[in-house]
Amino acid sequence: MTEVKPVIGLEDVFGTRARELRRLQHKLFETYADAGYEEVIPPLVERPQTLNTGAGRFLEDQTLVFSDPADAGLLAIRPDITPQIARIAATRMQDSDELKLYYSGQVMAARPDARTGSRQQWQTGVECLGLSGEEGDVEVMHLAALSMHAAGFNAPVLQVGHMGLIQAIVSESSTAMEVWSKLLSRRSPEDMKAHLQSESMSQDHKDALIVMVSGQADRDWLESGKTLLGDEFNHAASELMHLVDTVNTRLSGEVEVNIDAAVMPRFLYHSGIVFSGFSAGASQALLHGGRYDAMMALHGRDMPATGFSFDLWAWLDAV
Image 1: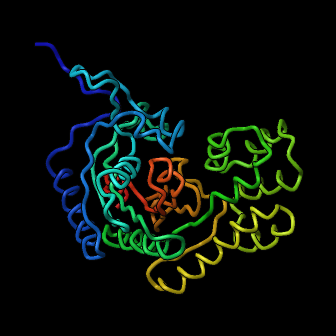
Image 2: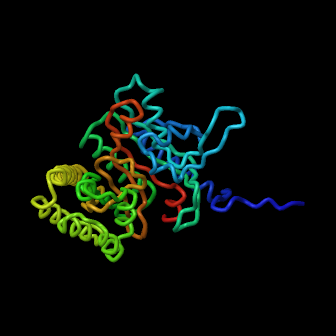
Image 3: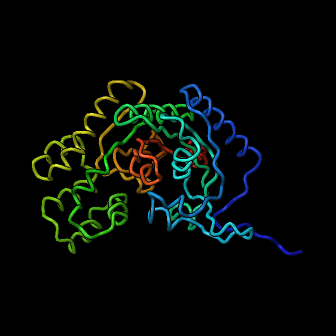
């Protein structure tokens, strides 16, 4: 009998682990329903252009594309669900000016994760569309905190940044944003210094990148950079600080919120506030989120959008 081996990076789940996933999923669904959110279940397969619209090359490298034997053309297995929510909001749910949605389903990356070797996630998340600026950001960040509490994480923390900060600092560089994102996520001053040797930007901008990658880009640093890094940086910094003040006031005792200008999203389609969730005892970020208004506009519906997502498998392991 021929032995059929599982695909590397994918796994079967059954027994206790399957029951634990469903139990946690049910807790989270109750949390989202109580907050007025409705479930949406997108298909596992999409057209590649749907996944790439507004996300472009940031998702393209992780998307597994194949030719449909039923003559539907090229199809793709989703590596991320948020672009599907953008499509649904722009096409199937046009009658609603405000959409509050949650989802939970499997996604698959074209390449294994460098840290875990896995190609699959059980992505779960929340998307809030139609609420602009601070109102939507505060609501989504509150749900992120409630999600971590529901899963049993202690002392949840949200590290909050703004894509406008890094965009302003590297605006004169020809280096792609994916490269800057990887450098900042690596948190290695040595790697950043080595890369900056080939950059022609001002010394103030280079110094700012070193501070960010060193984990020192907090509120005091934002205040001090206002006279050095330009109007676009100032605007993003002011928006970030005001949001964090508002969240700390409204959610006092529920979650700790800190500024970290070097926070990078999981995928680079975000265009404003971004945040990552952490908890005591968890060595890696538990969730990623932020605003993606620009992607909605490219899907044909110009409306504000913000949300967050996480891997349910990773949460079970971390808990």
